[in-house]
Amino acid sequence: MNKQNLLVISNDLLIRKGARKISEIPSEVIELLQKGQLQTVNLTEWIAVDHMTLLQNIVDELGLEKESAAVIQRLNNLSEKKVMKIIPAIAREWQILLDSKSEVDSIRLYAALSQHLSDSVRCWAAYIIGQNQRMSLHDKLVNIRPFAADDHFGVREIAWMALREDTINNLIETIRYLDDWVFEEDVNIRRFAIELTRPQGVWAKHITALKENPMIALTLLQSVKSDPAKYVQDSVSNWLNDASKTRPEWVKQICEQWLKISDTKETKRIVTRAQRSIVK
Image (cartoon, rainbow, N blue to C red):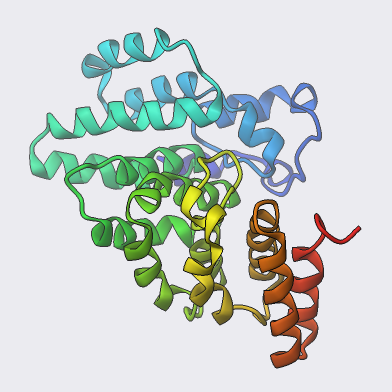
């Protein structure tokens, strides 16, 4: 279905840069995004997606019209429908629906979500993993990897947000697992390992233990102190910048140590950005 739809979408739409304001997004783009037939290309479009409209279209696409009425009603009753609230809420409803199905149907439906053309739908699938209380931390990390490595920026962000609560509740165990991830060839996997453990992060709960004692995650940071990818460098420097808001002296000390043992332009860039809140 999705491949057939792509054939009728103009190349101009597929290679668009994306509007700067929601009001400037073409109606044709909005319609295709809401139908799940087009990916968002920037944060403006990502935020503009009406997940309730998209959900209705996806349940119709998957032949779940009968089951969807109660789901839609419960979600419509939510008082908070901002994107970072509605995505986990939709994921919870999908989990309930998947649990009501046979194992074969559940696997089929989840595969349809996790491999969907729509980045927003794949975001739901990532949160389904994060909210699965029957899944161990190890299994969650294994299953979140495709989303952490996704080609779409929004899915990659949701991937680490989906495991934020597990990280807070199992910090030492999470860091132990991620010690191997920072050596992965895939830049997105390395970046995920750092972003998941940021003390303050973005649109996510703070990790109090790391705000108080950032040394806990130093093994992760040390491994990428001279990472060749700016995507990872930015994440490392943002991590340290987070930590500088509660432990500025510790961050200064780490930055000084890194410059002594790693005289590379990558480390220098990380150290400079890391101290932007404390060095004016």
